View 1 (cartoon, rainbow, N blue to C red):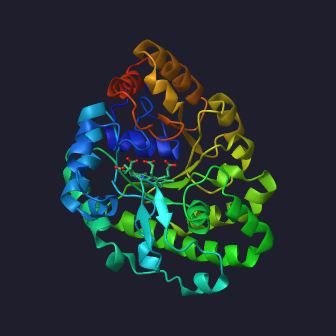
View 2 (view 1 turned 60 degrees about the vertical axis):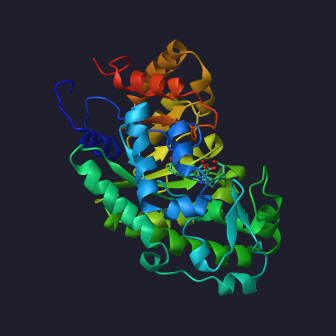
View 3 (view 1 turned 135 degrees about the vertical axis):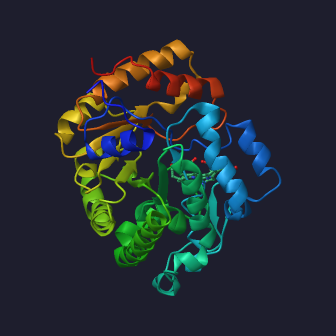
Length: 350
Ligand code: CP3
């Protein structure tokens, strides 16, 4: 295995599919963003949504993590809420998404449309096509993404970010039909969005279900798993593998492994060796350094990365990443220490 010579795209796709690789590839969730002075310089003065619509600037910040922090994959710069205004929802970023008129009634859900994304957000696909042309020669893989229906619904119902999304959970109990109808429309949106991203050049796609970890296993089985399975079944996964991320999901791990995704991205509270055992060769794993550890000295980061790599070897395939996105204020040196340790031989197969 050690003599395999893989370029970064082959390494990434093989790890995602559970084929032999020389070592685990590395990238970071939320790798472009506020922790980079270079990101803030390009963003300067623009509203977040205008920034996402600016093809040249979005291409530039998508590429920044390659050189600045040594990532081995590029995720398109956008946001999970970029396709949502096209459904007829008025929203803004402050800095997280804020919905003008939170969705609480059946009439509001009925009025939502699933737009033709190539018309409502053409810039997303232009950014992807431009990135793919830039990355082809470097053989760096390009990732697309979407927010999962439950997480999108969480913000749409609550109106903004929240610690416990009480309104959403109340809707689960008191108006389940409204929530079901909302999730169905969002599932349609997500499938269309990810399909169009693959067509525009994304070589893998990640589904972010940040808030599904709020649920009990039986609630998750009812409200979340069916959408994941539908999305996995409808996407062209032979062309672009699907990665699923659910934050705070150690109590849901067995259910995330049943999603139909090719890769399950686990947060830092999950024991990676245990996850590998439970995955039992069915899916690859991604993760799972505590993003808070990037504030630690480089030696400590390297030590922990070595442990994660060793644990990841028991999985069908392993993609090194954090257990959640890079935190604002993270020192760039910590991020570099992470990718450097990932690229070094420590923890690799002998
Ligand atoms: O990973 C990347 O670098 C690609 C771009 C990306 C962004 N958001 C850019 C962004 C991705 C993959 C996301 C996903 C996202 N957005 C999620 C799921 C993943 C997660 O982190 O849990 C969620 C829940 C959102 C919604 C969202 N957008 C929030 C809560 C916020 C504000 C706080 C924050 O996390 O920064 C945003 C704004 C946002 N999206 C910024 C960026 C770089 C910050 C904008 C700025 O002020 O410059």
